[in-house]
Length: 303
Image 1 (cartoon, rainbow, N blue to C red):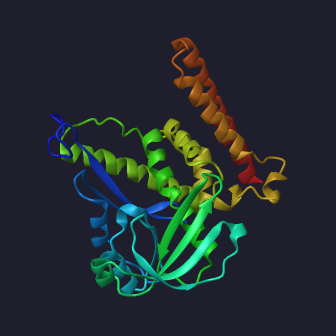
Image 2: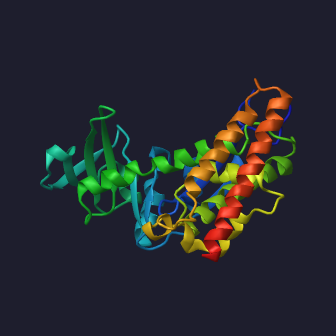
Image 3: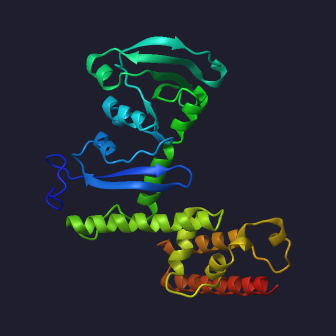
């Protein structure tokens, strides 16, 4: 608390929140807002600009019927979890196939005074049993067209946002901060997000099949060097779609194997058990492998 007095959360703790809207098509954030820990998650819905026809998948922290009705009036769809104390009246029950895990599919109306005033139109309530977690989940949505099983699968896709935060914390090193001022902390967070976006965009545009971590490691070791492989990736996207025509070329190089070799060498370099001499020899192998990969790619381009 003494280091970050501007980020008040509790008496003995400081906290920041990274409110993120993730696009599931490309795993790329569309909206990010950094706030202190006292700002409730549901208030972020006031900052969003809903797109008609889009699905907004949220957990129970964003359950506010007045804000959900605003999404509904702007012709956007939402999928969220219902709270256990939800009071409602069933108007109609749809037929369900219980072998899919869907236990009930209902059209309901809210009966509690204030929620009914804030959301006066029908809602769809779906109860789903997850056999993997052995847990019953109750969803609320304003979409009455999609099958109930699809609604459950949409909510399952919300896990991508958790993977996004896990990836940033593990690989972009924002667990500790270089400065203690508000500007220094936010600059470090925005830098990490920008690095993630650049890698994700490159992976999508070039149709790379390697993981984001592998691409990040390759860029890390060749950040200030001329890299023929990266130049070939940027200038010749179609060469690295791993199609049969490329793999059948006698001079082609398996780029995936090359990237994995880089990652393997990097992990050996980072291992603290190696002596400085051993780390130096490993780095020489990385340089030799890089030159070998660039030479083979030049042969491929000439062919």
